[in-house]
Length: 339
Ligand code: ADP
Ligand code: MG
Image 1 (cartoon, rainbow, N blue to C red):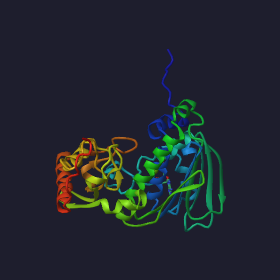
Image 2: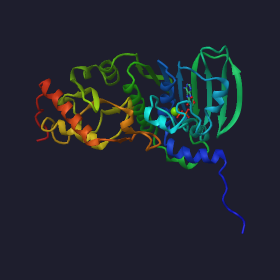
Image 3: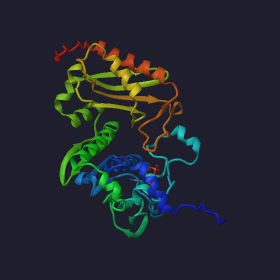
Image 4: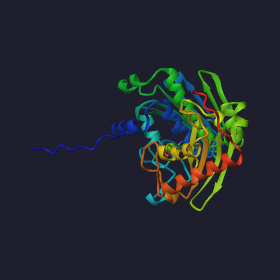
């Protein structure tokens, strides 16, 4: 009998990997924004058409790429961010898997324009379904622009699976908020179908929260600041009057990365015990600073779930820090308006 195992061609492997990294336009938004941040941009523009189904474009003024790097950036496992596995525990970048651009280019029409400040000319590359259509030397501003068009054009099943524009745009905006709140020192703009949705100048965290959620937010923010041996926490919780029935503005970051953790969410809720009307959820923008050696972020392709070495201590620290702030600022319970 003949042997039957074959190595998958790259474009097939990329398409399979894309299934993990790219669920919807918002996933592309996340990956491109994170790349712009890793490139040390201080001004980032996001342009979206039809909730990202037709276009997601990110323009940055970061370090750009050389001609060769521009081409390599679309290869699988091609990254400038780590060299050896050990680097995973000293990361100061969002990316490290070298998978995003390869995955995205497998399932969309991609156009990259990039130039390093030191180079006179830049590079333009067009890729469709992992195939390079053209690579040219062009004049370009320094920094990088990546336009991702017609997401899932070659996977009708995935395209049909996308939700309405309203729902997909909500996801895009959520992702934009998460990144913008993790980096108040970077200026962000978001355009949708040629209209400007957000224009966030570089500022501090309080000002960023206010710019994102509106002027009335300011008076409702209670600062949280606690430094322990295991972790530092900074940020704000909303006064109980700011609480929502729906699970709305809840942002938890670890080393500037938006993270989901129902366990640590519970620690915050526990700190609000007795202060909130029934079925209401606290608002929070909390930032954990932890020794990168004490967390593992490589357990999920999109990195929104991470593993903590000592989750129980973090729970206790978080709960007591929030409680302390609520006490210190004399936050009184809100009467239960349900009954
Ligand atoms: P990762 O971010 O995990 O390294 P990506 O596929 O997202 O993988 O990107 C591959 C590489 O392309 C990055 O390591 C980086 O060197 C380069 N790159 C991607 N986007 C940009 C950008 N906006 N500016 C400069 N370099 C970029
Ligand atoms: Mg990346």
